[in-house]
Image (cartoon, rainbow, N blue to C red; front, side, top):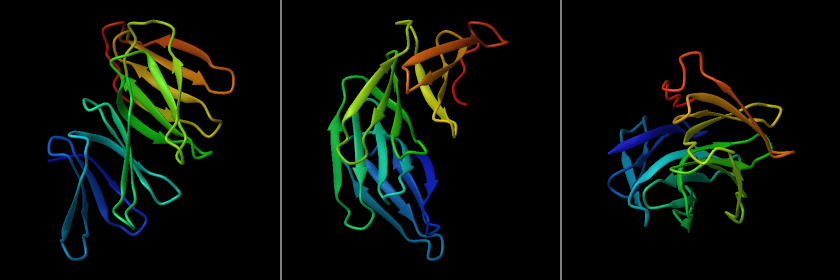
Length: 173
């Protein structure tokens, strides 16, 4: 039941098993698939970190996880909001969109501690993020029909209306 699919540095293809509590790896050279069970029932989005670990979100289980492809060990932490999209910043910080709330989180890859940033309007819903080299965190505000930018250095958030209007529901950048 693959949901998000990403390659690793060796050319293997990894996926999140969104409805069967798994992470999976396909070796395209052999066709072999290896699955790893998670406590989270719905791994959703994933990203490889430069430390070699695979980080993932589980939206409905409200979990952020770290998986070691070398040891097979998984560490999972609970979150109050629902984690959705995840990206790695140029400084190694993991950025998570918390769908179902107006929050974006900066996750420490070593401790999994989260610093939350709030988008000013409580009706905001963010699903995916886009990161730029200058450290800015960009998002589509799904419920408000806008494109937004968080400056993590100052905490300032700025939004611009989508050309298609407030009902445009931007999903990803």
